[in-house]
Picture (cartoon, rainbow, N blue to C red):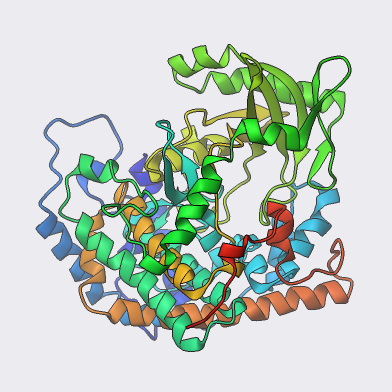
Length: 528
């Protein structure tokens, strides 16, 4: 990727300390990004053709370089979060992020965000993006997920039809400092733990162990071969997997895997569509989640598949020619994505027993755009950016992942039902939540190792708990900030400044999105 997409030149800042102005640091970093190359880049991160004489350097050398970064950005510096005096109003930031979305769905988006502080956090990537850019920064670049909160990890099927656990949302992917992903993840751990009413001690432990999982896995990966890192997968419950699962949480993940294995196009078909008298299959509307589209929109979506298929590899283009389109609908997804144009396409291959659902989802400008160096021109198509980010970060990606355009708007395309699964965070018992948080931290380190210098990151993190303790304090402080921002949104709705669909109930956003309540085995029975 072009200078790892310009590299994060905030790494050139040498003046950061726990008491320095974060705004000054971010402004200087943005300026240095535009001035020229970042001398902290390794040769393999530079743009240009393959260099047969290139040298990665020993992991010991790179770890030492990462340790040296502590001299200008002490690990303790990450503990503080105090909103700068010029911090934008979070509600104004949210309203600005609605630009370009479907206006009729914005009240639904605001309702889902107002349902709970975690709902707010999920939908407010733009708010936290500004905040992260005004915190002390190491400047060690990776391809970021950009929105690595707890709900953006999950289960899905590999091309070999095995279920793996990994990152699963890349709408906000770009290039930036590795710790920005980690901080967003940790903030979400603290926020969800509060909503689940875990005691403060357990809440801090969950955050602490999430950091520790990232740090320890980075140390494990630092001396590993390049190909070995890229082969790393996380198989839920496996004894020799990338992540470890607590015995008391094993059954929870095992049940989640069983549900994911059943989450296929064949099972989805009778739930969302029906065969009509003329023999054709049509979607059954269920507003506001699933709605019909007019003929012109359906035709535009179908026409866009021609461009999409050309972004696949030759053998997959050949495979796709065997599928024909039966129907198109609009489907509301997620919390932060509500208001984006997201279409569901039903196709059939070898008859009615061979359905395929494709999601054609609009890709918007990432929240971190403008706060990090611009991506190269070949990634100016936002759908292509999302696809590239997913392929870099996931151990195995959807074989039908591609991109297209509709009416000059960028979209990406993926399978809608690909043995995908998740855990209802609001219903997890403490042991399962703790294991899940640990697993997310470990997986994030593996994802970053694929494009970043994991030895340098491991060197910065170190072997002590210094970074762990600092980031626990950050997560607690930012969870407080999230609760204040959420309260501001709720107040704005009551005042009529923001329109919401209807009064939200705690936890309703996730329940409406999944369309189901927690299974009995997922419900908490103790906080011990």
